[in-house]
Image 1 (tube, rainbow, N blue to C red):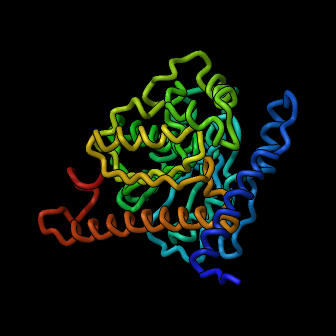
Image 2 (cartoon, rainbow, N blue to C red; image 1 turned 135 degrees about the horizontal axis):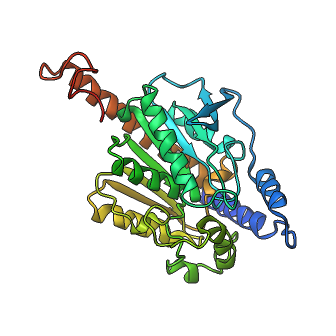
Length: 334
């Protein structure tokens, strides 16, 4: 009899987990011609996960939009995470993603605010970007220091994170400490080669399904606009980025090309691709080892960025050249 070493057992368990997740997506029921309300309800049912017991949640309002505040018991009181949910700009809400947002927040020890930005087709582009920018501005105006503010989002929410950063820069606002994006939808022209090369590997999407989200969001507008498709944006001046994706997704090239564009524009960027896992695999935390590893990595990145920003702020406070009163001319943020 051959004994299985712990390493071999772990490899086999991880493979079985990946196969189970793949089967879960491929065998998911697909209603024929569902209404928009049915799509949204089905999406919520499929994604909703319970909150950890040590994370308090309460509804709030940010920049005139509903939002969900998630405060882990582990939060240090310093730093804030602004989160944008996925769903193709058509589906989803802070509630559908509360479970994974809370997991990220508690691991990073950050209070999180998840924005209920406006969705298409009722509110096409650029409504989501306008809401993202307004929420970012409202946090700054409310006293959150940019060097202690970080952003995160998945899929369309990941694209929205980058678009919001670009819009904030163009509006003359300071950039946050950093941002994490999971499987970002960053090219609404659907121009990535993985749209073709990963069509059999992706257990969730077809090209037609992704186009069905792009069409109502764009409402006839140019898909290559930088704020709709950040792979075409000038990313100079953006903060450090962490981009995560799975190899089994049609949007793989969105992540790869976004990271490449950021690097070319002198942005500090880290790209991590986990093999044989699907789009936004982080949603499978607790059931897929790679999901927990990815969330831990993202949390470490966000926490480190906030800590670095806090240290820089402390150094400035000790600088005799800096004015003591932040309201004095030339002090503070633009």
